Image (cartoon, rainbow, N blue to C red):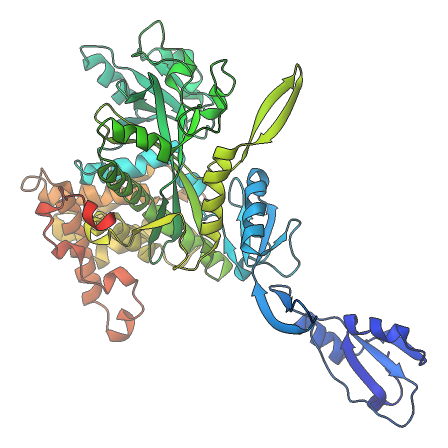
Length: 610
């Protein structure tokens, strides 16, 4: 409560009350309880108190002081001889309450950067939120950067990744051959059976569960009936051609864990780390046969599996051990005649093309969550690309990990039944610079990260045609927090884009919507709806009926003609004020105007990269 004389009241922060307790002057401390004080607390979030002085002869004015903002930490630099305040520096804060297994390396990175860690979270938010595992929305996402993109975990699952890459492989068959031929089960079981029955020699296929990790549930097969004997059909999975002739080092099969950092989606910015990890099998490799097809330590390079093998070697030496630095392995490859700059150039393009394949669905998911939260999220993410080198030293993409392991320890059984954990020098030297340089957003301090996009934009932008499909899809879905299109929106698209010029009637569009919604099931509010995959296939089907006879060999031209037709009629029907509100791709020059006859073969720009 306040004193009777308001002029003797002085409003200060709680922290400034403490020095007054040492004074001998009588005083009364009480919280402010009037309506004005409550309103100010609600707006400012600052605790206040009223101090009533009994000193006579002076009247203090009321002053309102805020507590120091918890979004920054004020670091006071003192001189060596005198303890005087010289300069206040704003230090970023990092919330590691959801870091999980990566908390150790993140904590070390924060310490080296001189930042402030909040392991249990912060009441008013932080500048960075480090999220381990799947995406989890923090309490105050608007205050800082999130280490995950919304929807990335689902997009990088094996089934969805296959769907996205196969889509671009259909449009650009020569440019996306770095991904082995892959089928999705159970929906493409018939295609797998037909492929194996036509082969003269039984091919070796590898089955991977959709949401599996650390090698869980992976097995090789040479008979399609092996799928029925397993639990593969009980949940979604992929069946992939097995690379039976990999490049070997010291007679061991190995793969490369390449770390790619997606800094932002718009504008697209991709970095790659020139240091990574090579993971070796623990048994000498032999081509798969009926006898050795079940030998996990020979065919699978996963660390989580091979660490239990008797042949696993834990070593900090560069040229020894079952886990080594990529730089050390590349030195061995260079001695054997490998062109390392060319190999890195191919890996850079592989990484960019894979991210471009994921961009449409990531942008759709980002727009949905931004509409729901009524604000844009700032995100970045570290991705782990598992790449295998075939016998010709060509990189082959195996999978993409949205949450690559950032642990820097390894386990060792010191005595029977007792396991101790030790710091792995190899893991520490690889992962600590990646985490530190990823959080340090200053462009001039890239450290171990090397920018590959937009540096390679001139060679890769023509692959971003599916993003135009996503923009068209989102335009007719509207501002709803949904990624499904209803029958009314689909018919509206056909009418406004004049797709009846392609020989369709509105009734035939209704039938197409029903067929596509059955093929790509999705239900919203109890009625059939169409997701983006079905919408994309609808555009292909529309163009195929119109242009299939004249443009059969280039499906990308079919899609571009449909998109150009839709965009032309949408731009034609809007006035100048509406055009300013249209999505960005409708205001930019159309990609359909480019000459795509030479889009299928691009030389590698190795001279500009190294």
